[in-house]
Structures are given as C-alpha cells and as structure tokens.
Figure (cartoon, rainbow, N blue to C red):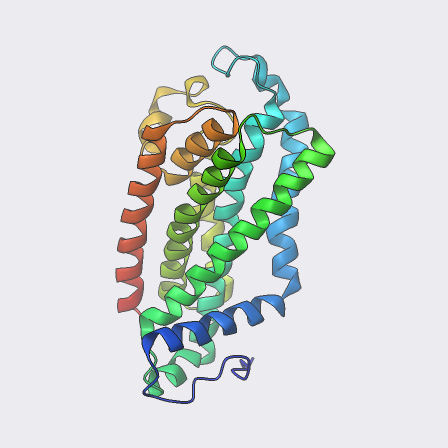
Length: 266
C-alpha cells in the first residue's frame, strides 16, 4: 500500500520545525478523514459500551461504595470518555506501524524531517479528535440516556481539558508499540492486550472501594483511573485536586518515557 503525501507536501529541507509539524499534522488529519471506518469505530465502540453498561451495570449504583444520590449514567459517562481516549489511541500505533512498513519514514528522513515531528503530529491529531469525540459522546449520553451535568461550564471545560494529557500519554504509549512491532496487524492485537488493563484496572466502571485490595495498587499508577476520578468529580459538581494532579503526573511520566523510547526505534 502506498501512502499519498500530496495532502501535506514538505518540499524544503530547510523548513522550520514548526512548518514541518504543521504539514505533518495536516497530513495526519487528512489521512484520518480518508479512513471513516476508524472514525466510526472510535465513536461507535464507546457509544455501544455506554448504552450497554449503563443498563447492565446500573445496579452498581446501589452498592455501599457508590456515591450517594448519583445516577449510574452520570457516573459512567465521564468514565467512558476517558476509556474512549484509550481505545482511540490504538489508532496511533496502527498508523505509525503502517507508515514504517510502507517506508514513508525513510522518505521523510531523506527530506530531513525530524523524527519527533512525526510522533508529535499524531499526538496532536489525537488530542484534537479527543475533544470532538468527547462532545459527541457527551451529547448522545445527554439526549438518549438521561446524562446530566451537575456542574457549571467552567468545571465542564476543565473536565474536558483533563482528558487531553491522558490522550497525549495514551497516544505516546501506542506509538511506542507501533515503533516496536512495525506491522499494523501485530499492533492491533497488542493494543487490545495493553488497552484492557488500562480500562478495567481503574475506577471507570465501578468505584475502587467495591474492588479487591490488590487492584488498588495497580490502579494507583493508572492514569485512566486518575482521569476518571478527576473528571467524574468535576462533572458531579465537586472537585478532586489530588486526582487531577496524579492525572497530570502519571500522564507526563508515561508520555516522556514512551516518546524517548519510540524516537530511538524510528
């Protein structure tokens, strides 16, 4: 399969890093738009989970550790927004593996395009798509499932903003996987294996108080769990500064480590 670079030509080897990055972001967005199946999957899968889980697991709201007076759909929706960020990030690894197997990066390297720009472009693209996906899923949950915000617009925007560092960290992690495996089929399979612990060893679907003690240690280093706690608290009209700080800290560590290792493999 050949990759069309006409959407974002980089003609000058002396182009600035910012110009190169802008061209790569444009290429990434165009490439994503030309694969509507991936866009539909990144929306339909979390939407299906939102519908099914809100009905199947709503009895969780009656458990002792569940927040009092909170409907399960109000608890689940911000959690699914964090989970959908993880699910969508697998596309980054698949896209990078495709570029590596097609020889695109060799061509870019010959044009003196910085390797870090290729990674950054995909990360920024995913961050932009995260905002769009959040608005769509939140709207569906509100109109079809009865989800409602318990906070003002400022807290809502802050909750959305907290999903961005999570998106960056997850994209960087799956880019690392893509740089290691270099075959889209392998990355897709490995991505599922990596994605599951991030999704379920967290407070996304039920409070950690309702889980065995051994899960708490694993959830303590899971940025998805911290992002779920932080965004959930904001959406429900409160705040959890500790969880917000942990979201930023764990996401930052995961991003830096993944980017450094991925750059060495390209």
